[in-house]
Length: 462
Ligand SMILES: Cc1cc2nc3c(=O)[nH]c(=O)nc-3n(C[C@H](O)[C@H](O)[C@H](O)COP(=O)(O)OP(=O)(O)OC[C@H]3O[C@@H](n4cnc5c(N)ncnc54)[C@H](O)[C@@H]3O)c2cc1C
View 1 (cartoon, rainbow, N blue to C red):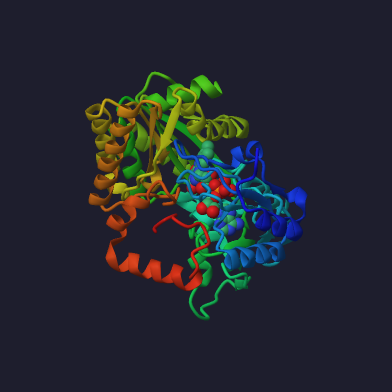
View 2: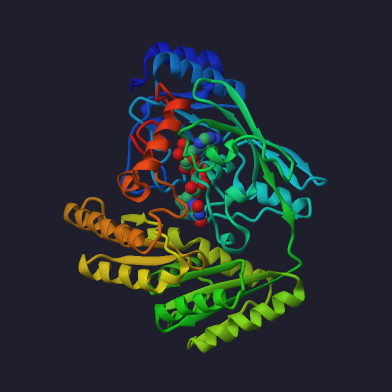
């Protein structure tokens, strides 16, 4: 098969990073023609593996000169089409920039390259007796660069916050090749605009992140994990509202609906109870006395809401198994239909029960199969469409169902994406959500950093 990028550009890329680090053949490019998002594919011109910020700089200079689009890619687990190639683009893959550069126990920080996986960051923190809380379901594979670019959340977001809350500094190569460092190890720093916050969640459109300085925190001394089951989703949602209203902030408050529970049990075989409509996975951590008290109160609130059963994990091994089962929800659902489209509409917590009922009505109205799970404590739902992209009429109904779900989320004061980003998948909904003034400012920022439009063109907005 002939490569689709021009021979001159390929020759210059090979000179910059070595021919073995440039993929050009169609069969090699196919794995980079999609990410974790269903029903989206586009072949790139080539894939380049970078090992240093200097290589990134040289590639961006070349891209600027030749007006070649560049799409930065970590592990490609994104769920909004963020790392989907543009036609004939250079896919700039960071997975070989995978060194942990420093763990600073005195300042409680870790400095890593962008291709380090999330779990490697968490493990390095644990090895130093510290804790890195953000734990996206994909943490075994996703890169920290991808986490920062998407501002990813995780199961512990409710108590500990999301990726943004841990980013203290970033090294970024700007679209014209200039290297910028923003942030530092200071706990307080208000000098100038907080540029690092501009790059967090920028989805590969404003620069390529080449180093990440993260905050670590002390490890909680104790933890208790439990599962509560309910005959109705409303009861689970009410339990979540009551826990928050009781001023308890658990580290995890996740839910699975009936469809998801059955798929997960079928897949992970962890002994989840099957005789229920909804399951809450609840975890509290911190000082042993506080954990004891909070766990007892959460169990009581679940029972007050008619929980069918409340089961405490007997040890760390069982707790880990339950969290792993929840993390496998997407993969478990993906086994039962040819196409799995996972969404992340998010609403204020007070509107959760209403939104869950709405998703249910939409599924019935459009005759679609939807499994719903998610970070209930954050108001972050993952309605997951179990469908088949070859069935055109069903895909049309899926699209209409999405429109209704996002419109309702916005109406309830929510957002079109709580953690997966806009990318290509939510691009059409962004103007309606963000409004004219925000769209104008976002366009102006992008134009000023990337006037030639080479970085991730067509993503987030045109
Ligand atoms: C099974 C599964 C479970 C998931 N669970 C969660 C979850 O719980 N929470 C959550 O938030 N997400 C979740 N995700 C989505 C996804 O894993 C995250 O968005 C993750 O952060 C993407 O990381 P990645 O390395 O795969 O990035 P990619 O998919 O490769 O890229 C994502 C975006 O980041 C940009 N990018 C990547 N690296 C850089 C860089 N170095 N500099 C600049 N831009 C860059 C890309 O251009 C793209 O726009 C899940 C995905 C799957 C498949």
